[in-house]
Image (cartoon, rainbow, N blue to C red):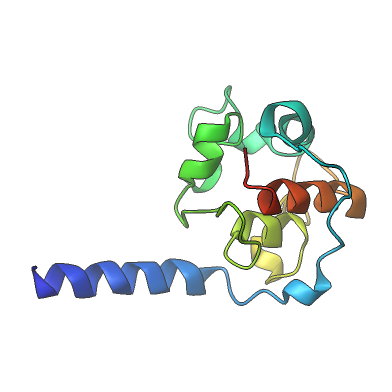
Length: 137
């Protein structure tokens, strides 16, 4: 195994994780009680309203190279990928961003976004959390 490649890969992962700062997951709203949460049925409609302006199918160059319009794209992630880790809310930076529990510079949607898109509600964040905890399907 090439040691320089391994070290470079490890440094890349550390930089991408530290770029979003450390999230205090104790500040997350509780998980929604809904069972069988899926991307297509439950999460995509939320993302259409809150994320597609910058991360949707009509966006020529999605912000952070992140697309939010398909399950495959969300699981692939963007510049700080993976943004969603099925079953792991601690490693799912997308959840931290929409819950506004990390550095303000990384909030989604951004605090002063030009489109005036409001942040997700606690109930919506709880649904995203449940989706991730249930395997992000």
